[in-house]
Image 1 (tube, rainbow, N blue to C red):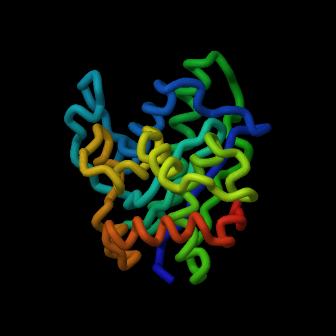
Image 2 (cartoon, helix red, strand yellow; image 1 turned 90 degrees about the vertical axis):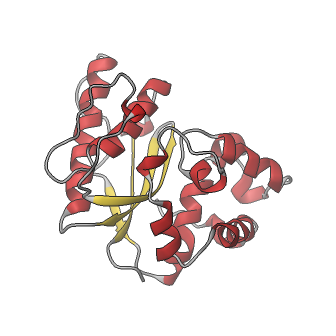
Length: 216
């Protein structure tokens, strides 16, 4: 068990999409950075926020994230007491306000209160990081959990090219515009991994029956 690490996830009300276009997705990623500040949400005067991201006093360390059409997943470590709850509250409220204004909607965006599951069992410890990475395969290979993957290399290539996940930050030497959202070094340290070991473990995990377990 690693103290204060949680799997955070939520989906749209009635399973509706919470990301309509790439602008929505980028706004959510910016929110992951902007709302992760101890005092107030960070503001930036630059047109593209990640051109020059301001320094943070972090509430949490973000280790993994994935955006799907109607839900999101995060793996976070708390930095200050109550940090995860405060970060999740700000993120949900801020993105809902943005979404409703942009898309001329009102009311709730998310289905329920955001779930925050403490990573405390050995199974969760071994499973959750890979589950978050592999979630995107559901888009391109809908039956992969039941039928397996015929072409593992193709699946990995799809994941590397999926922009709306932290997976490319771990498997591509080229730094992306929003690579600053995640703390890769901390992830490897906490989970006692290095890049090569993580790649091997991920490939083994894809082929293992544990993938059929769905925590949400």
